Structure formats: structure tokens, C-alpha cells
View 1 (spheres, rainbow, N blue to C red):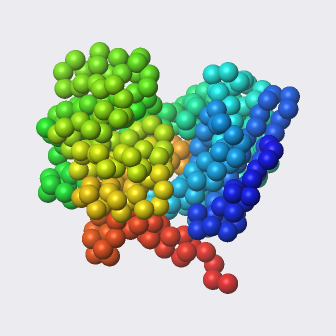
View 2 (cartoon, rainbow, N blue to C red; view 1 turned 180 degrees about the vertical axis):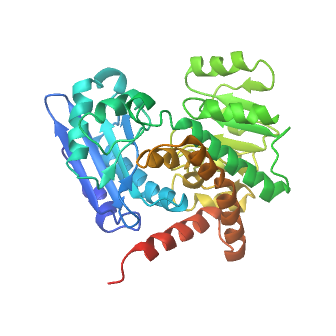
Length: 362
């Protein structure tokens, strides 16, 4: 890893978005591994967060993403009531081109070298089978297959949690948690998005979808010939007339200066991490009368699942915890109303309070 600019160092040490405890740059020349492991906080316990495998344009971009994602995991884990801090790892490169067993084993050795300060799991570009390989070198690995002592695909409970957050938003805005006959736009119908569509259709919602992969869209349309339609891209989706809820379920930054002014939906509630492109977007949403369900609150079902692996996985126990995302989201909306702030700011305050109370008094 080379040429990390002062911009990243400023974020790490001097900005309000920093405060990270540790950042590890990892390189294994033999396998081609280049990775970043960022630990934001261990105030509540060992840092827990997934491994993203992505072809970043620059190494600086990879470091910045790891920092942002790790910070988000601190808040997510705090709001989910977990005894874990926040961490995240990114592997630089196209997983379709460079992912090998040797690379994953090398990555596992780097995670193991942290001695349990960071617990890893799946994220964009990594899957259950990958975590099985990583676990051969690192016991602090979750998201493994049931055959290897894990819980399997965490996207099942991630989508369930987003669905509960969406129901809470409906309760708060329309006085009824039912999504029947509501029109919901889902951007990204991959690992999490396609499960979310199943929940929505089971309740009788009308769903509009889009995805950059035609096969992902076709899979949904073939399964649901009625009640689901598709549009060309996210630009078309956010402008769809009569949309009640917009669910960003792909990569971050979906809510920005270009998209917020043209959103037709009254609610934003999706699975993507870091949906707010920059500070201030949450106020722009509020000014337009759009209710935003904080991403790291509603998409916490997956981390609830992988955290449970460390204690002997029980699906029913995890699903019961994920169901509480409904109550947590409602509490955030209520706090936001009382404090006169956007829901994202209210969620941050609650999470920061829990982390602060967990730190020993100096």
C-alpha cells in the first residue's frame, strides 16, 4: 500500500469523522493481497464488521472507504444493542479476477494477527464460502457455512430488519405499519434486495425494481410476474410517480445533492451502508418532508446474526432480536421529533451515548 495522502490522515486523526483506534495496511505479494483493516472503536467490545472486496480506483479511496465503513459499524453495533465495537476491512481488487484461496488465507492471517480486536464477516464481494477459507487461518471469523460452524447467509436477516424498519416508518408517517398496496422502489436486488422483495410481496406491496445486472432483475420478474415491475436504472426509479418508499440496497452515497431533490418517495429505508453522501443530506431530506430511516439501524439484522455465531448460533433468537429493529426505529423517530433534529442525527446521539457510557471514566 503506497501514497496514502494527508487527506486520509486528516480524516483519521483530526476530523470529526475520525477517531479510529487502529488502521492496518496489509500486503502479501505472493498472493497479490492488498487490504485495509480499520478499527473505529472497541468501547463496547471487539470490533465487528464485514470484509468488502472491491476494485477501488485508488488505494486512498480504499482507505477512506474502510474508515467510513468502520465508523458506521460502531454506530450500527451500538444501536443493535450488541457488545461489539465497529470495524471493517476492504480488499483492493476485482474479486472476479484476483480472488484466490491463497489470497483469502493470507487475509485471514492478517486478521488473526490482531488477536481478536477485529472480528470479520461477509460484505460486498465476499461470501460464505470465502469466510470458510478465511476461518482456516483465523478463528475470529463469522458468516461461515453451517457445515463449518457458522450461520450461513446473513442477508436473510438483513432484509428482515430493513423490512421491520420500513414498517416502523409506515407506522410513524401513516399511522399503520402495513405496507399493503404501498408502492416500494428497490434499487439493487442482489443478496439483500431480493429477500426484501419477498417480504414486500408477501404483504401485498407493489414493488418497482432496478439493478445493474439484468440477470438479477430477470430472476425477480420471473418469480413475480404480477406485482413487480422494473425500470432501467436508479435515476428512473427515484423519479417514479406514486412511489411511497425508496429502498437503496446497493452501494453507498445513494442520497446526494442530485438525487434528493428529485425523490418522489415519502420514505427512504434501505439496506445500503452510508447512504448519506455527505453531512447535511439528512437535513435536505427533512426539509423536503422525506422520512429517512437511518441505514445503520435498519440494516443491522445481518450483524446481529453474525455476532450470534460467536455464542452458538440460534436463528430464532437472532430473528427475535432483528424484529426489535421496528421498536428501535420508532424510538429514533420519536427522539428526532422531541429534539427537533433529523432521524439520522437522533440515531447518532443515541449510539454515541451508549458508546460514551461504556468507556471507563478517566
